[in-house]
Length: 307
Image (cartoon, rainbow, N blue to C red; front, side):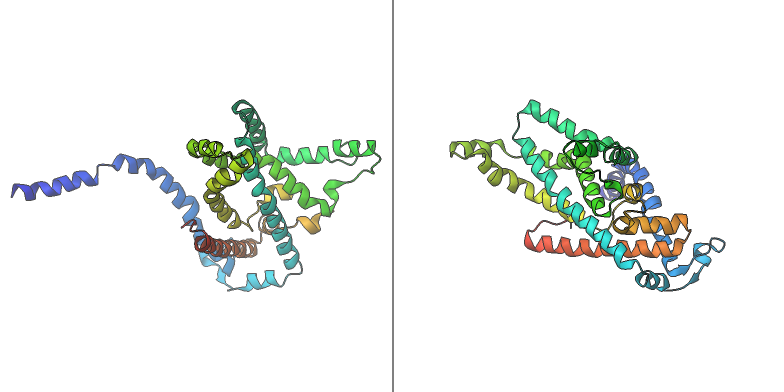
């Protein structure tokens, strides 16, 4: 009888044993619920003729009207094409370059490695506004450093910021320069966990530095690289509007108008909240579908996946 009376007490103590840890987790859970899950209810605006007076719940349903309007708009293919072009170019250059940079850093002396890593990491702290201002100053047709150097060697001044064909290279190039050190951190951390005995065994076998990189460093980074690749591809349509909008002007609009800037102009500047929500929902669905496909393919091919 005594054992039966004690059992519920022991069970209750076990239940509340880690309550202090759950209390520490509570603020983060509340934040996620309020700012991540509760706003999901606003998705219904995409299927309604939204009226600020009637509110989200009182506005009339219009079904897929806003989606059809977007698909039939004159600049649908231009906006979609610009978004895909910019995203794929970013993926092509911003993904492998930090990987190669991390491999390069791993082969340097510790002292020089720290200096170069710090120098490459510093641009990440430059704000988007300041970065775009630097681009306008450096590439100015009248006083920019690039054009002044070009004139010295006999080249004509070029308005890089106003040339549509230069928008994507300038956006991607500045993004790679700014995020190179930050993106390489996770690869450097993964290389720090490689067993030193592997390098010692390779040296005994007479392997060169390049062979060590190919046969030890690269295979050690592949699981991390695949996870990051899946996550980056899952965000392929999700380019922030801030930098694009600041670099955008009437001369390069044919190449710089993407979905995020399109949504910003419609939603905030023209107050077409229902239509802009539909466009953004379309963008999110594409990202989700691509993420599911890539994650499943990666799991089948390599066994590495997000879930």
